[in-house]
Length: 159
Image (cartoon, rainbow, N blue to C red; front, side, top):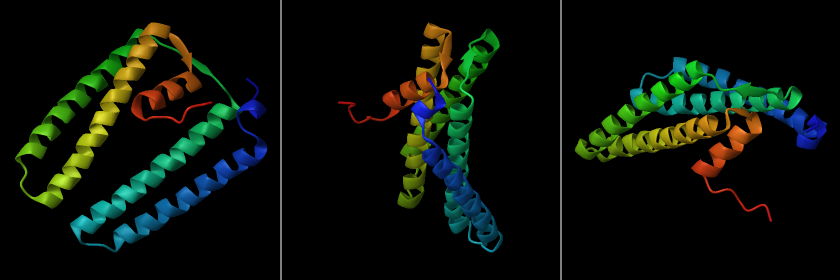
């Protein structure tokens, strides 16, 4: 697949601009965090910062993949690490689920439920990736990405 078939130069330009915007948001959130003492507000601002860091990384990853497509091969060491990660995710999910059931404070429960939902998404996507890698052995980025999103969210039909 030729790079131009994946994304045109204008779209690539906008991805790079979006990375700049996310970088500015990260710096701004760092400045804001230095001025806030309230733990709850700090947590909320920090989650915004983390989201921007993730968005910046996604844009950079897309630019990298588009600029120099690659394939990766599964080796046993990588699979072992991913399986260990999956077990840690399972433990984390189990602990958080138990805590959600015990907590009485509604505000704390809301945040813990969001954390629980995030851990469920992580576990589901990791499980799906491991299964796919075991069955195919070698797969490109687009195969992993497509598989991830199909398992995690409902994509609009391509018709």
